[in-house]
Image (cartoon, rainbow, N blue to C red; front, side, top):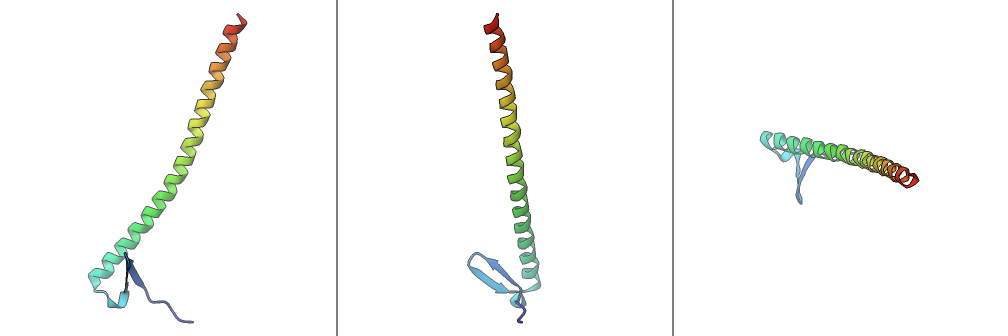
Length: 77
């Protein structure tokens, strides 16, 4: 089994780690870390958006129910 060499992918370019300078390795690691953080933040944002939608819809439904009850009380009088 062959071990895959580490590489950086920027745009359409693939650069093997063994061909990089120390500065390029550092920058490639920064890019990888930032991409991972971006993906995590997007994942969290998706969850937040879904939860926010549920709370907003529940709030709207609650207000509609209350408004319907007020209207029914006025009709009964």
